[in-house]
Image 1 (tube, one colour):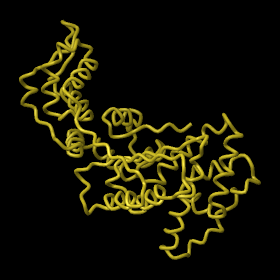
Image 2 (cartoon, one colour):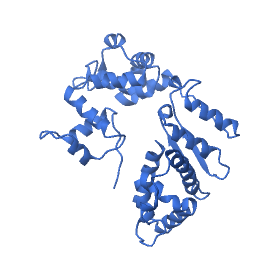
Image 3 (cartoon, one colour):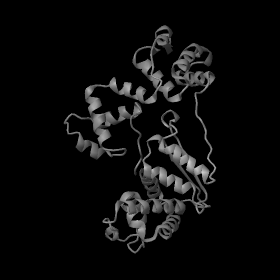
Length: 309
């Protein structure tokens, strides 16, 4: 999880490196000074860091071959060294002139190495000008969960941890959201927004998905005669909705065609990130319209587009 986030971050830095080459050079030297000869290990797992550290100058001290990295070491030693290097890398990135904010979502699914690195970063007295923000579903994190142990360890070592519970938004906010979405005065949306709030619990994701599903099922439509959005409130009242986001997304997937579901499964096998060419090679169908598939999946919230120039 952490290495994927850092790889995306360095990809963005690499794209912007042309705008300020002097600043990028200073950053490259800070990184090299922090991780030293151990950079080979990080270059193997963070490709965009390698692009940043080796760009432009063949004599760059970080542009050496990765053959010097001994992969025959014991797995435990490699894991400990990798954690150490990731902590040093974060320390090199966070600077007084350029504070660093790291945001990771779905920490309830984070692997043990990521949680351990987060703990080490947050308790390292040498790391300054750094803010970590993590999101997780408290319904899936109990007292015995690894994330709970990590948070307790961080607090016990004197690091300030602020917990913010994100609950439901108020009825008035849902009414404003519905009003903006339907381009109707708030007074005309009160009855609909009240039902929507009750069924979704005021969770923004559910509100948006619920409104979209109402439109798809013909319970919410744009009337050409009145030139405004209209809805069938009685049928909406009896419409069921899941109270769990995973179940909600699963139900949404189940409503797709078998062919569409098969393509989504194929995408899942490609990992958290993939490009269009890899997907095109994986799905060998002559009539496969990859642009249409990706556009539809993005609209449904299954994918997120990452710009890579």
